[in-house]
Amino acid sequence: MKHISLGSLDVSRIGLGAMSMSAFYTGAGSDDEEAIRTIHKALDLGVTFVDTAEVYGPYTNEELVGRAIAGRRDEVVLATKFGMISHPNNGERMFDSTPENIRAAVDGSLKRLGVDHVDLYYQHRVDPRTPIEDTVGALADLVRDGKIRHIGLSEAGADVIRRAHAVHPITAVQSEYSLWTRDPEAEVLPALRELGIGFVPYSPLGRGFLTGAIRSTDEMAADDVRRTNPRFTDGNLQANLRIVEEVEAVAKEVGATAAQVALAWLLAQGNDIAPIPGTKRVSRLVENAAADDLRLSEAQLARLTAIQPPAGDRYANMTSMSAQSIR
Image 1 (cartoon, one colour):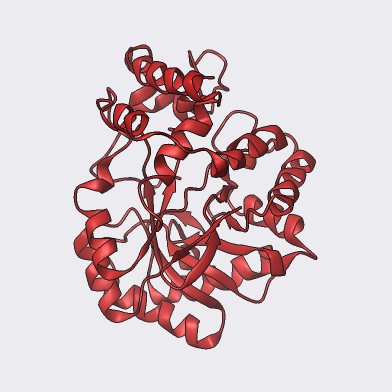
Image 2 (cartoon, rainbow, N blue to C red):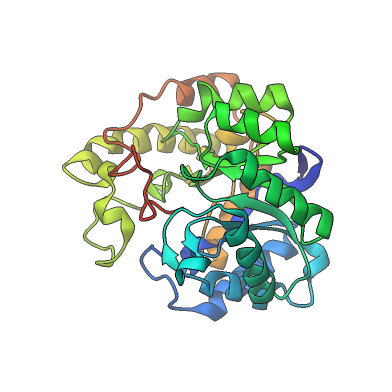
């Protein structure tokens, strides 16, 4: 597996998102042993970058990742997130990036993960009630204390990123980015490149849609969050199949899967990008990792880049990006 740099942090250029092993998608939490095998296989293939968060479960995903990396800590660049659970408020689901909450959150994450430090610690969502300067100041204290090595932000806008970076270097920003979601290209990616900050696309396979395996929500569990996602509802899913058809057409040309083509397109967008496709199955992990060796022609990249945006917003409430809108 090739590596890239997120700021000063060296990672495999394809990572592993662990969320769906424990939360929010159909089958989450149903087979922890297979999930652990998937993480082990990722490490065997040279996938060093593993992503989790305290809110996934909550807490159970960090515990799962901790069990999986036990004895292999030196092989892992470990990322987790805080800020969507308020520990001073009895674990209520809400935005809380106050220094008090950060101190409680990191100690809980370290315990569940079974480690003495986190390599990349993200603010999961910007807290509108806490100045970003206060949040990053508290995170800088954790860097000095050795509890975290690098600071990240998730779903932050360009202005917030600049303000945060002025307090302490930000290593990476995580946001949704794929052939299904191109929003970061307008302002966020240019700002990151100006500042030398890496980019971590989550949901790089469009919440599974770009694999071509989702043709209806009927097979999803009742609590699968995609059932209420605007891009999967109100007829939008069927309208958006045109995107999959384009990806599948390129996949047929190169003898690859749709997932591999979608990831290869992302990797071609820059050497400062490390997508974290999520899966709970070894077979999908192997498939995704193979995208590291796939090269698309300029014509194929242009064809994919020309795909028009999907029907439907990313979330049901894009204004608040509420605590229910979790990734």
